[in-house]
Image 1 (cartoon, rainbow, N blue to C red):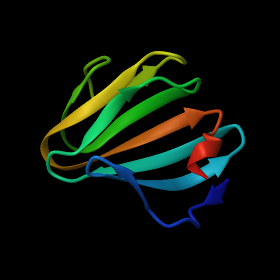
Image 2: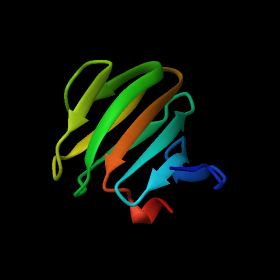
Image 3: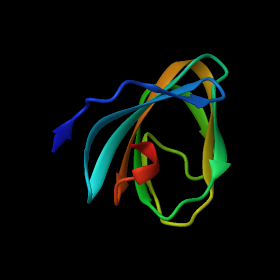
Image 4: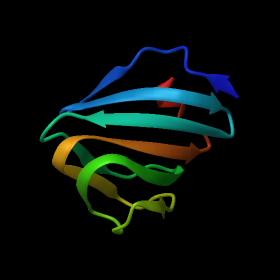
Length: 98
């Protein structure tokens, strides 16, 4: 697995994205949220597992500290208390993040 060699990227809406590790089959990404940061609702073909590292969020899909979002399901989140951070593992890796 390749370790992070890429700098953080402004993902918009008070969120910074950092690819921590990646291979064609899978990747681990950290999203850091500033106070009031928001992950806008979206859908993509990747399966995603999310772990809440810090902060309190409202998710549009499933409550809980960690969960799996199936491919094609619209999802997003809003930071309620923070700053915050979440870790996403996606498969296959998202080429648009590289």
